[in-house]
Image (cartoon, rainbow, N blue to C red; front, side, top):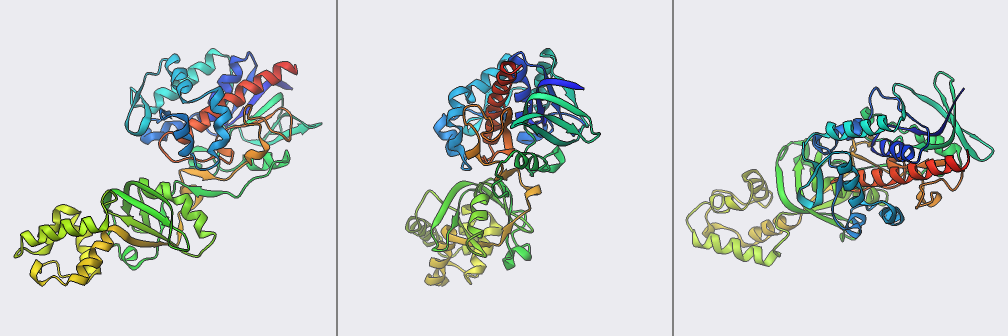
Length: 422
């Protein structure tokens, strides 16, 4: 019968960090994963370049983690994004800062980050078992006692860390296994939903693929509530697809679409092509340009303003012939066209499913977790970290920061707990 101080279940970013942190406390550690290799989610993150963290100030980081980011205040006081940077540099991974504070390895290769973590596990003598499914986490007398594998092997431990992720990106091994183990320990699982996910729409122009593949740069996308007021606005790029909308602005808005869909059957998204000028200014500028070229076709005068497909689409929507000149332009139609440049609405009826999402919303309720130790308040010796927790952020290094910080603290504290209770 095998015995370890700490068992870490899950070899994603939080699990790897937890196993290293527990090992650094002098604990004997088993890291077990059902996949054939560790760090699969890390290896595909940041488009294969691995966006390891974000260098924004902690206050800003928390704003970018709209799903219970405030829970991380205590954790950040123990181990924060600057500590993550120092940790990787100590492992020999030099990092560079890119736009919006995103930090990448100088190599631009996610695998170099994974390899450095695996080397550190080896140095610390962490036992690694891959291709091992777990049947259950065992609890005895109000304490985590170990695990039972699918082959009915019993492995004892003084502390268990559950780091198996959520339900998004299932090909990396995140298939929601950990929720049942958490519930068995008395934990509440808040409602699971997709976040950072493309949005679906049944608008005729979407179904007809009129704008499919068209990307709009630096536009303002707002999710509107029942009263037509913006719940959230993000200014980034977006993309029209054959099923709806995607791209960074849409992904960031998606969790708010999901929440609004609980209150109403459809949700309106408003697209502002020029978020940095108001409607009247836009009207005056376009009007002036058209007036200065009274004989030219409207389409040709306005072409520098936006992609031609989008221009033709908005002109047709407002019954304006693209070939007419300024003198023939119906004033009311032109006003309506300007309004659409600033306030074109698309009705969303849903999102793609959770397994198509980048991030899982919902999970183990953070009310039942000690924010400084990432320890269960329901079961001694049980710790949680990463995406299994009800914490979710935007893409851009925020979720991985949350995973690494919670992994670090879960590992440190599980290691200490195990040593104290040896």
